[in-house]
Image (tube, rainbow, N blue to C red; front, top):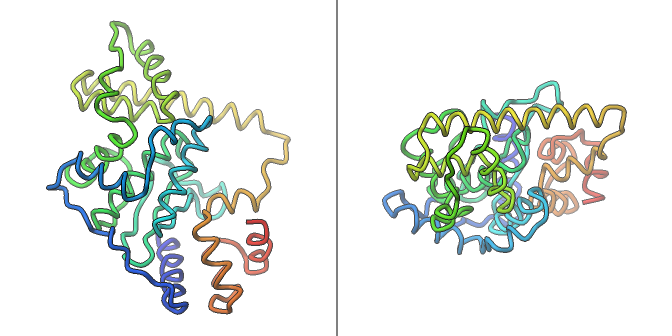
Length: 289
């Protein structure tokens, strides 16, 4: 978090020095008292989100990319960071799934990319609600009452409206049957099975114990898939370092750095700090963006 705060302050200062600073009116523009559905509508219209377009993408990564692009167009920087610079320092999603810095000039959202990809869209919307509420916060661990619960409810309803949840078939059977049904239901909607299980629990369709059991089962399946994918990739070169880094930083951040580096407002050292690379790698990173 200290690392991200430093990056955010550098970007904010850069925008101010470049006369590009704009106070975003959406930061802190809503209150919990307005209710879940009203806030859902304000956020959908505020970022121009189209649920049908989101679901038309073939892969969950592409659906997230569409949502991320909509959020970044508003002036929010969305970063994917799940370690301190190498895989040796990976941070578990159980520690944090994401966090938001609700700054009026340079609002930041950070997603833990060590989490399952189907969960990214929910997390980025959860953090977006934090910004709309004007409340900086870290999300992860147990679901709490208050702000965290409200952010969960808004984010999940944007991705899965209440009328669609009613279409889910609750059939008699064991946990594995329920996991399979939820998995199929969530895949077509480009969302995580854990989020669907949470909504079913909130609606009273399944018990708290069943929700927790199903959520744990989805985590076990994800961990198994992660190990399998890692083993399958052993011995291969993997994706290009700079391609991965560009994806993690996002187009909004790359554009600001590129523009202000060329104008001399940002030095290579500060640009490297913002982008998480050494100063001599900044030009290479930006050149292919």
